Image (cartoon, rainbow, N blue to C red; front, side, top):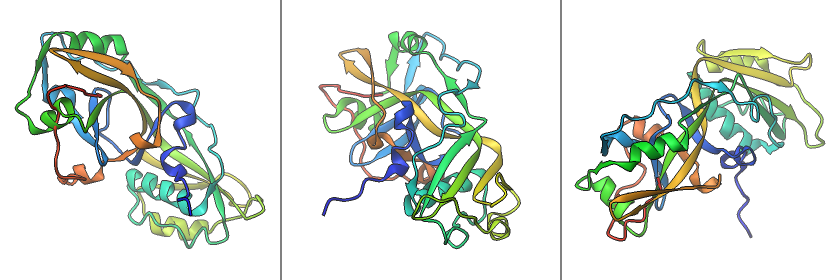
Length: 265
């Protein structure tokens, strides 16, 4: 039996963005992610690339019109609770599991509000990468930039938000109320819970600090001593969670870039 696709890692793809499975602060343009058996956040490119050109500063945050207020498809409750739990944890919820409060629901629909996009233009990134030196002694560089079995990607655009709105529906697609007092009781004081409908079927959850929940990358190849940048289509394969690295751990052992120098940044 075919495995059911997980929309929690693809729900932003239709807007051209990839998903941060565990949203958090600190994921920014000019950061690298690597992809081999897993996809994981590696850190800022400046850690391994030294250029005579100043690292480009992101443009001022701007409203992400394509995403702001747009609703996702209705997602199966199990997948939906995963997205909600990750968002609430990023906002500072003490206990992000809300299965009991949503026991009457069979699906949920999401929208992010107050969404901003923070971008480094690809041309600016290209100027930074045009001249410089790569630290090939770094084992992470060796794996992702010089090996044949791994890829790396450069983040050029991130989506940030302080709030997420959730609408609950039953098996017939009819909106159903959720237990707001129970929700506020478990998420703690760091997250504001505000019903957006009289039936309590639509709830807005808000934190105080914008967290990164989506991103766009460019692929890059290392051709001799030069970089080559290329577009990368949004995909569930590029979704990653960064909480393990934030805790000082890695999602997988083993990291490399090799001769042949195929890299996706």
